[in-house]
Length: 318
Ligand code: UDP
Figure: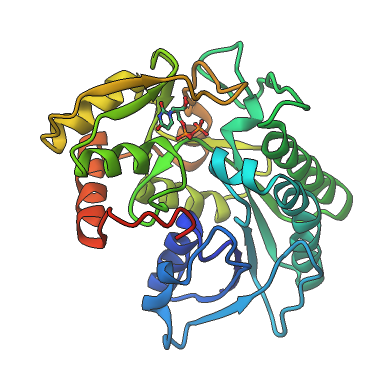
């Protein structure tokens, strides 16, 4: 296959590039580099299965030659990033998705949308199943991301129903691993950076809100299977292993021997979901998929990555 990956220089996009190349496919990588970094894909430079086009997919996308699959992963994805780029986030979810679907239609390619657990907002149903319509505040600060992704799902289903395009929707729950930006504000890189600097970990609010963390290799396997399936309805991909932020902080402090402890800060973004856990029965049934890497195993690899790449940079955009 020759696949187009948007957001290819980002955390998930770059791991997808690696996977498709490893499977013998050719990758056309696209990114505007506002939150992605060429550092994530520089090891692929010179590989003849790989090419990179710097482009903002919210503008018309032109790719010469055949394309067999489009994986649309372009978007700011951490709360800090989408609060910094609210309009770009709405544009890439709406216009970017429209352009990426347009490429897929024109080329007769399959299309896979990177959607999100944020579709469910601050959920009133637990764990979250795909048929739960969610509890999103459209005008809250997180609305720019949540509504962009909800619109992207609606547009994807419209292309499926109207044009019979082969579409897939992955609802991705909190995923972590090497290449998350050190200062992207998300809890995993933030806690690891603080721990490796011997500082206290900053739990926001009372730290009793929950998340369920999936290691990146498991997530990529799920995406790969979903693309190759014939299932058009949304599929949750994530690890159901749920814990509070305080419990998560304790694990990080233990794995890094950090004596810094935990401090509580009043920095929760309005609408920060109180609970989040994927129900992955659909992924199990349809894809035969479930996560295999334990939290501690995944965290060890991620901690080693940050030890190697260094945690002392204060550049919040790098
Ligand atoms: N969080 C925290 N301390 C931090 C960063 C985040 O306690 O330094 C909390 C945040 O309030 C949220 C959870 O960790 O409840 C996960 O936040 P993240 O930004 O990683 O992703 P989200 O799941 O909210 O998109």
